[in-house]
Image (cartoon, rainbow, N blue to C red; front, side, top):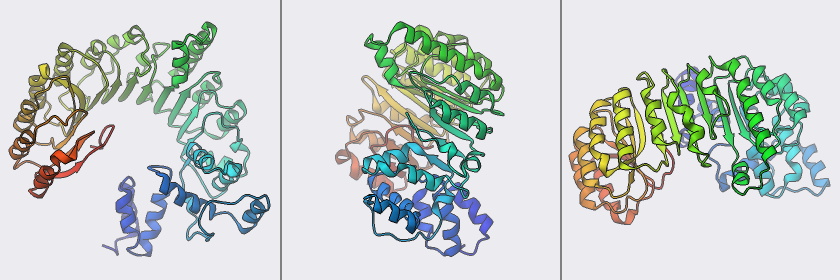
Length: 473
């Protein structure tokens, strides 16, 4: 296998770009493998960083400084809290496709060497790099578009994340360089820059758009310190921004918003395939009423957070059977609501592959109907609501799960499950595809030996604990 064609190896390692452990283990096979894997690992070096990895990453970045640059910085009494200086084996920075200025600034500030931020940025922006993803921090006052080589660096930007109050001069510079943005993430702030709408209009076709509300605005409203004219200005900006999206109504496939839209913009997105809506700052339910009349026939993915069930049910019912991923987060609903949402799902979503929902004891037998009707289900994430009969739930899962369902995650408050309930569930799973099992919070002292026993028997293929958020399915 070590003599596989380089092009084939590249395609294999490209598929493994999220599996860092496997890539690291393959680095030492031979020189060819190493030369193919290093660019894959450095495509986005900012992902999955912890404190220890930050120090190593900074070592590598600083090793790209020339001797002349290091001497100049030392003459200014600037020293680096890193290992001894060694020239890098590769020009790692040239492999970087994601320029995450948020992470760079955070690393530099946390280590107390923010005085070299500009020098670090200049290492990345040069004639040898060409980025596809650009992340700009809040209140960023470095004019990166003026750095030599910037035009080439940013000419192929496909993803841009920035704050709505981005500096006018910087935004104007990016508008002239970035014409092929496919994914745009705007973080909503006070004192917003209206020229962002012009950036949106000048793009050839936007596929993914995210408008994320900064909670500082909402907190100000709740504390009554947010003046009425500021609220009017905020609404005017949102309306202006949303109208600029109409040009891309036929091309936008993914839309994410963490506050109610100020216009009827969602009604334009007839080709939408993925929708994420969040009401995490508790805007009035009335502001979300438009959802009831929303028709998205081609919708495949629906992620919602704190959206009332009374609005979600008609939204699901107005789709045409293409929904294959549904995640319902942090919704406080009663037993009847729980039953209604499950009924809507198994009636209108025959192609469902992944589901996350709060499940109440009252609606537990609706889960059985869902398992029977949704035969393509692969992953199931259950967060129990109130008193819950785990024995009945496990019996239904082992009896009625479709053949492809083997990825399970159980949410909070699972430590009251008796060991015999788990044992019965695992025994009844015998002969089926080994399960991938995750818990958000489970006291392993009570269940560890039992889980290890069934891993050895091949009933459980993989077990993970303290895993928050959705699982990769």
